[in-house]
Amino acid sequence: RERQLLPVYTQIATKFAELHDTSFRMAAKGVVREVLDWGNSRAVFYRRLHRRIGEQTLINIVRDAAGDQLSH
Image (cartoon, rainbow, N blue to C red; front, side, top):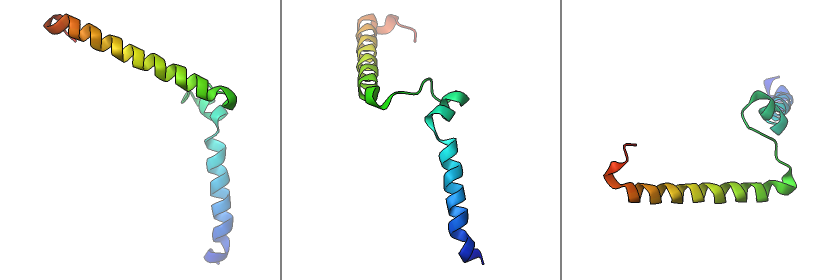
């Protein structure tokens, strides 16, 4: 009996997990800030990565210039 019901239970568990992992559900729960449009996602992530690399570069420049004067 258990072997017969396993495919049904697997199907139910999969659907349950899929319903909880949607981008809109994650946004509603506050796990992600916003839901991205798939067509724009590459550009959004590129700009975000480019900005973060620039920020890190600037931080490194300031740290190098400050030397031991920087407390944090």
